[in-house]
Image (cartoon, rainbow, N blue to C red; front, top):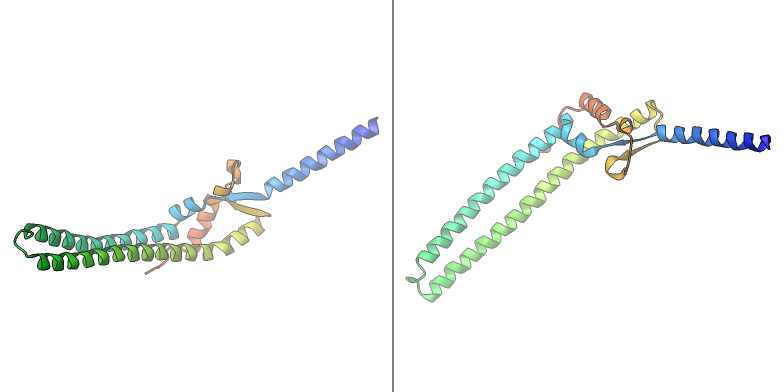
Amino acid sequence: MSFFLKIIFFIFIVSNSFANQITNKIVYINMDVLIKESMAGISLNRQISNFNKKLKENVQILEDEIKSEDENINSKKNILNDEELKNKISILNKKIAKYQNTVKQNQEELNQKKNEGTNIILKNLKPILYEYSKKNSISMILQKQNVIIGRKELDITKDIIKILNEKIKKIDIN
């Protein structure tokens, strides 16, 4: 009977030790925080914000022109004959379609810039994560969004932000 207890005890210790080894080698990183708080991420977000502001200003100009023309048509509705009214409405509809197309193109361009900037950060981040995992004997790095429960000390986000800030201060997407 004591032999059986020794085997169970040995299995328990070995499995517990193995479980500790695995959990120590799996960490996670919060990519959203990294993008928001790293110098490169702050640089990217600032450029995206400025780019979006310019796009909105251009769209606002078109929107104001459309409103003005619509008010002009409404004020002359009773004066214009049917053909002139239809012609002005047709021109207005073309401007509205152009406006909608411009808004769609601007959104696509903004998304493209965001993706481009994020890809630059990720390209620089991969070798950092590789070296960090090698240096710290880490088997796996997960994204925080894929972790249901994890101890706070397994979060390497702050460490990686420090290293990334040393390697890349800003990025340019213009």
